[in-house]
Length: 147
Image (cartoon, rainbow, N blue to C red):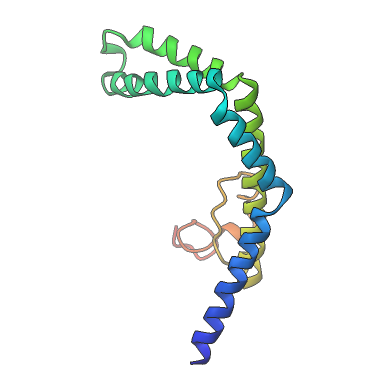
C-alpha cells in the first residue's frame, strides 16, 4: 500500500513539473512560433513543397546515382530545404524548438543524476552526451563495460 501511495505522489509531482514546463516562457515561445509557422500560407507552401520532394528523394535514394532522376532530385531537395530553412518563421520555430528541447534535456539530466550517477539519460544533445558518468549506464559502452 505504501509503495502505491508513493508511486501516486511521484506521478503527481511529475504532472506538476510538466505543467511548470508548459507554463514556462520557453514553452510559450515555442507555441507562438509553431502557431505562426502553421498559419502562414507561404511558409506552409515551402514546407509542403519540401515534404513532397522528400518522398521522391527517398525513392531515388534506394537506387542511388543509378536512378534516372538522381541529379535533378538531389539538386532540388537541397534548393527546397534551403528555401524552407531560410524562411524566417521556420528559423524562428527551430530556435524555439531547440530552446525547449534544451530545457527538457536539462530536466532529464537533473532527474537522472539525482537518482544515480550511473543512470543513462538520452538527450540527443552532444553538449550533455559527454564522457561523464551521466551517459555511461548499461548499453552506453561506459563504465559498466556492457556496451
